Image 1 (spheres, one colour):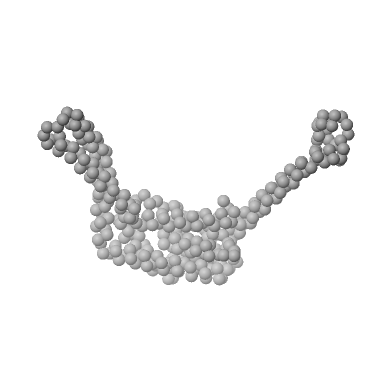
Image 2 (cartoon, one colour):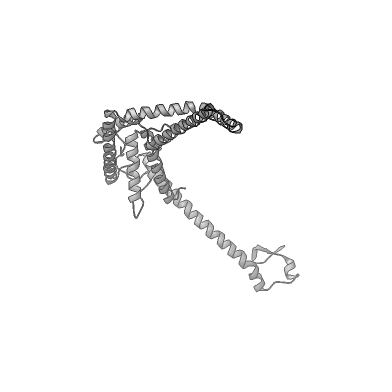
Length: 289
């Protein structure tokens, strides 16, 4: 291969021109596709650079924080928030023994299935003990009894725990103090969102410097429509106030588990998942995913 004078970057196979000097058109035929490829690559690199620049700009804003006013103590349990948080704490304690509806349904189903196994076993036994049964049917019934006995033994402990949990749930549902605390908590839950909205509005109005967890999770107010951002910010702040999240960096703290089936933990896990989805949507909006 050799390069033409004036075109040092574009080598051309000598065989193509059989040792003769190529014409200008032949040179252009070789060079133009390569130039087009370079232009395409430059365009792609430019677009990627713009994307990275936008991402770095958002990250810088999130880390530095908007506002040069006083630090905003958004999640401080003071003033009008304090009695609301106290009511929510009592509601949390009251709901420890109360099952969430899905958990209650699942436990009832487990108990019903266990009772069904015992009923099938007892029915098969009664047929065996009820008189003369053809041998092939007796063998089938004996096999069914043994199978049911095995399943009953395997599931008895779990079914017993389910029955006890349902009994505790029923007792808790009948306790007046729990009912009153839960109702007060539902009222406080709505009011604490209003309080969170007022705090946030005041901080934004003062151009206050937002805490790290706020900047990490929410960043700056997007334009032209900030409504989704504002709803998400209120939800995050209300969550931190209700559940006592104090993590300085992570907006929602440690993810909760709904494994207990209790109403309070299931609700918290659901709210956590909903807010996490919101923050993920905001992150995608700012090209952070």
